[in-house]
Image (cartoon, rainbow, N blue to C red; front, top):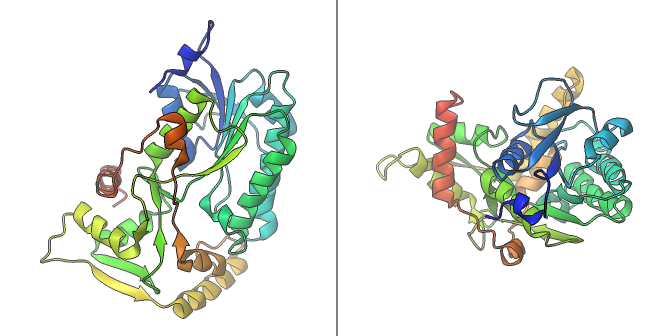
Length: 326
């Protein structure tokens, strides 16, 4: 992979501002950029909490002054921070929508505007399904509106998995006990991408400076996506289950999940929390088409995903076990 420092005629390695570096996707991105010679500047909410290789800057997406300090003198911005769980559409929009606009405006106001990559979501393709998806679409629109003068690119990954991910941990724990939960409606298919492959795509985009003004969906190397049964089978292989000990597959009717979501949301409202299982999350789970059909970044940059489903699941399971999560 091209070393970004080689693209500069002289001077120190380039600086990249990363938001969300303490999270799953942002952490993978920050580590990949550091490994490629970028000097990482990370926005964090609390002092001392962030990657030890990065320069930490305390602030938030609501604090204009901290955003201006974050982007001062940087060569690139990679915005990975975002809400995946919230109690209302307004909470989602404040971070995933307006927060993008604030950061884009701060970057666009620099004398030498940096390259800007927004980590969106494939959910933005179907904004009517959920508050989350609509907020991610609003973030893309805010970038286009406030990012005048920026060479920006939007990435829409599908479900992202890998070491450090807590969102898919629940499913892997069930898989580890030999139980695969399958949303009713066997025709549904989805694409996936490993966190390391997604981070490598960001590095490749910055190295090539390709794709300015574009929105790209991105996936692993498997065309056509996967069925839920494919994921269960791959997890079974990752856990070393044989044909004599196959996964027990439990099909969950949509009506059952809707009922559980209503109960869960009601409980979370009483205790003042945000629900992991909401009616909107059920809509996303049962949507039949989360397939990414093209991987244009590969042609533009030479990036290629390395992780097959079997390799990625096995590596993720090994990491969970080593960390005591399984």
